[in-house]
Structure formats: structure tokens, C-alpha cells
Image (tube, rainbow, N blue to C red; front, top):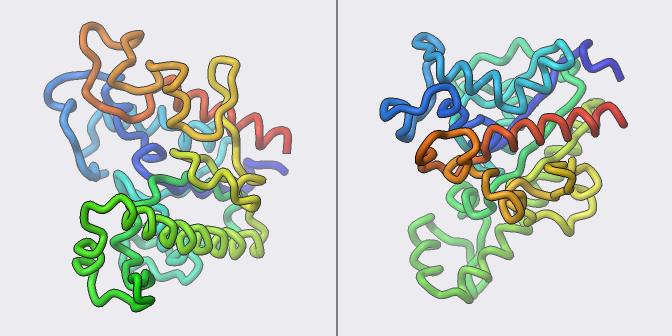
Length: 262
């Protein structure tokens, strides 16, 4: 496939958005605190640096093409499934972005970065059932039901996993039916036993070792986390647990390797 002929679709959480990479441009008190969406009308050098260093931009730039991704700091798997559904329905009003001029035929590849499973619970509470097999009337009722019980949390974790994994596979199959190739990268290893997802997962090569998910990299290399990246920061690094600049580079190179081999 000639990747320069069409574009990429990336979707994920703050890992894909490149949160924290701005620190590598200039780590000061002004940009060392949490930030939300950055207005394109008020560009800041450190944020533009972040955009050019995150793996999504680097992949598209490598193939001399464009890419599309949600313009938000983070998001759950459910958020991103809904975002992709908007794409298929051309219903972008809820995102306050006019992407209606894009067609599925403008893209060849979707790379879905999965995130933390429990982040999507608030968006699918009406699909969950209690111990009496009854649907909840509100999200607050679900939270009260779960409480502090580890057993209850595990019970609903299993439900959430089943629902979200099916939603994830269903939306990706829709894109495949349109001729768009689907790949996954992962923040955690929650989906490692699902064949459909596992077969499309891009393993991350970092320092001569291969990883299923981003979070596992820090088990062997503490500098994979910004807060412990003493190689790139003088003194104390920013208090930020997102993937470091070198991890984004490893993800970028791993994606290229997979795409070129396929």
C-alpha cells in the first residue's frame, strides 16, 4: 500500500494526544500544570512542539500525508468508539467540529489506542444490570451499588469489559468493511486475550524488547514515564505519569515497522 495517497485516523486517550511532551520543549511552572484543550487561535510553542513529537503526527509526516484525531486531551474507549460512529454518520455536531467534508475513502488506516477500561463506565451505565438482572436508573445508582466492595467492582468490571470489547470490535469491523485497515496499540493489557484485537495489535519495541502495552514498558525502563525521565530533565522532572518522549519515539518506529512489513 502507498500510504501517502490517503490519510490515517488515530484515536485514543491522552497518550495519543501527546500529553506532557510540551515539557520537553521548556519545562517551566507556566506549562508544568494540567492543561485542557489548546486553542488553535492561541498557539503556544511548547504545545506545537508536543504535536510534532507525538507518534500520530510523526507517522503521518513520515509517509508525507495527513491524519485525523480527536482534538481533546483524553478520552475513554467508549468516547473514541462514539467519535468513530460520528465519523460514519457524518454527525459531528456533538464534537463541535465540522469534519463532514471527510469521506471514508479519504483514509486507508485506523490506529485505535485503547485506554483504561473503567473510564467508559459513565457512558454505558444504562447497559449494566444489577444482581437482580435489572438495569440501573441512573449512573449515581450504579456508583452506590458498587460502593467499596472489591467483589462488586469485579462484577461490574466484567460486565463493562464484555460490553466495551463488543462495541470496539463492532465499530472496527465497520471500518474494515469500508476498506480501512485497523490496528491497535494499548495503554493496558486488558484486551490481550481477545483474538480479533490481539491479531491487529502493534507490539511496541523499546530497547530491544517487545511489549503488548505502553504501561508495561516502565516495568523495565523507569524513564518511560515523564516523571522519572532523568535523562532529559535537569534536576527533578515534571510530576507527570504520561509516556516519555522516548516512548513516543518507540511507538512511532514500531508502527512504521508494522505498516512497512504489512
